[in-house]
View 1 (cartoon, rainbow, N blue to C red):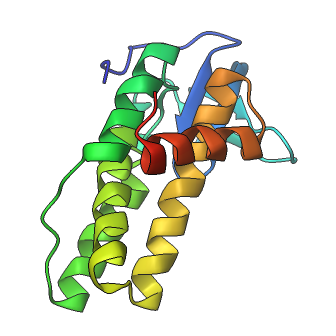
View 2 (view 1 turned 180 degrees about the vertical axis):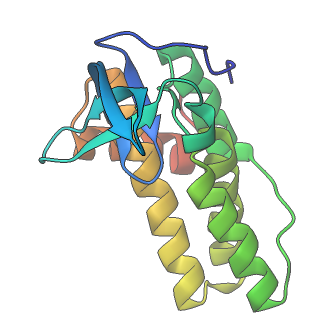
Length: 168
């Protein structure tokens, strides 16, 4: 995945965990504790959500550029073939899964989804792991849809074809 740039401009598609994909709508200055600070204003579609991310440290907030179309293909491959070692013990596995999901890294999330799908096929998933699997797929579908101009059903279909039929 590409490195996070030092700055974003109005109109850039970005991802901010846990909100998902949004668009930088500009910059604004806010006074905090008597000091002016610059913030990116990020607006999220299908709602009234808006976030303000410090211009000086967008990476610390988790802000990153949305995937490119080429990167979507790489993430789909990871979704199909990714492998990760997850702890067998529930508490440790839950911590690791939560860390991956909150990271916002689509490659890690796709790898996690691939592994959880494999577990499900081999022995079934406990409820919390099944919820994590569904959340991973929702996060990926949201970003794929935004980047590729697809609705949620089309983005899911793109993932299902890659996951189940080995077609690209």
